[in-house]
Length: 497
Image (tube, rainbow, N blue to C red; front, side, top):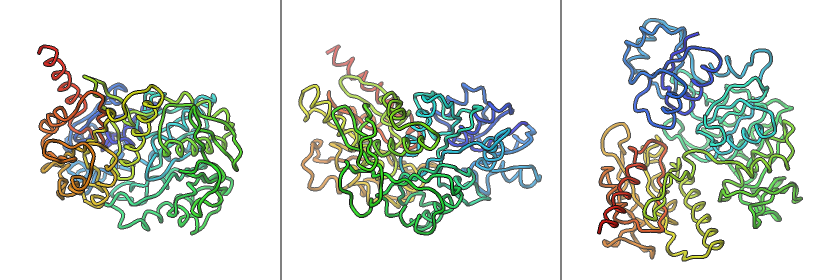
C-alpha cells in the first residue's frame, strides 16, 4: 500500500511514517516548515517529503491519504482530496488498525498520557522493556537517545505509545489516545493546555475519562496520586486496577491529595530509592535531576511491572537511561558557556525545567566545589505552542521563570508563529523587585522579535560559567547553532586580542 501522510513532520505523524515503512508500505508525505530532529529522521529512513500543500500531489496516486491534525478545512490539498472523493483516514485510526491490531493478535499497548512528561516517561518505559529483552515496538513524541529513533516496529507483543490528548483530526475531535485501546494507561498529571481546542480543564478531564473507559478491567491505570484533576477523572468511574504514585513525596507522610498512593521516591546520595508502601524496593543511580523525573521513573517502573519486569530490574535499566533529545540536551559549551535545548513550552514545564537545572548545578557545586554564584541560568523562551500563542498562559510566565538569573524572550510579530499579545509586557514583572543579576539597564528580562538581535544580546550578557537554557517546542530558527557560532566568534576575538 502507498500512503501519503499530510503533516508528516509532526512528532506523531513522523513516527507513524517510520512504522508504516517498517511494515512494508510505500510512504511519502508533505508538510510546511520542517525542522530537525523529525526531518532528519525521515530523510534517514528514505521517506520522500514534499514541501507545502499543493494539490498537484494528487498525481502521486497513493492508495490512502493519512491526515494529521495540523490539516484544517481550507487546506488546498485536503480540499482537493474531499472534492475528488479520495480515501483518507486519521493518523491514530491508521495506527490502531494497521499496527496496534497486530498480524496475529492485538498488541499489549502501554500508553503514557498527561500534560507533562509523556515523552520522557514513554522513553523510560520503552528502555526498561528493551533492557529486559522484551523488544517493544514504540511511538514516542521525541527521539530517545537509547534508540536513536522516535518509532520502531517489532514482532513483540508489546507496544509503548506516547498518548496525546490533542484532537485526532479535523473530522474526528476525540483525543488521539482513545484510538489506542491501552491495556496499561499512565496518567502522569493533568493541567489546562491546548487552549485552541479545549475550553477549560473540565473539557480535558472529560477526554481523559474517555481514555479510562477504554482500559479493560484486567488492565492497569498508573495514576499520579497528587493530582486533584486526575482524582476527579477517576471519580467519574473506574473499572480497572489502579496503582498510584506520589509525584513530589520523599516517603513517609502524605497529604490528602496523595492519599492511598502506594509508590513514592526518596532521594539518596546516588540518586533516589523507589518505595512501595513505604518499603524500599530498589534504587536508581542517575544524573537526571528534579522531582518530575523521579515521578516519570516511578510511573515507568510501575507500568513495566504489569508485563513482568521486576522493580529491581527496571531500576537497573534506568541507571543506564540516556535521556531524550531536546530534554535538557546539551548542544555545546563554548567560551565557558553551556547551551541547552529543551522542549518546555508550558509554564509548569518551564518552571520544572529551570528548577531541575538549578538542582543539577547545586549538586555539581556541592560535589566538585566552586562558586555557586558563577553558575547562572540564562533562560531563553519562545512561546510557540497554540496555547501560548493564544495568550492563555501568559500571566503564569513570570513565576515560571523566576528562578532564572536572566530571561530572554522571542516573540515573532508576523508569520505562522506570531504572538497575539505583548511578551515584553507579560515578562515585565520580572524586572520589578528582583535582586538577581541584571543588565546595565536594570532589566532581568528582555524581549526581541528578531533572532539575530536576540542572539547578539545573549552573547553580550553571557559570561563564563553561564548555562543558557533555550526552551521551545519548535526549531526556534536554529538559534542553538547560531548562538554557539556567535560564542565561538567571541572566543576567537578574545584570543586574537
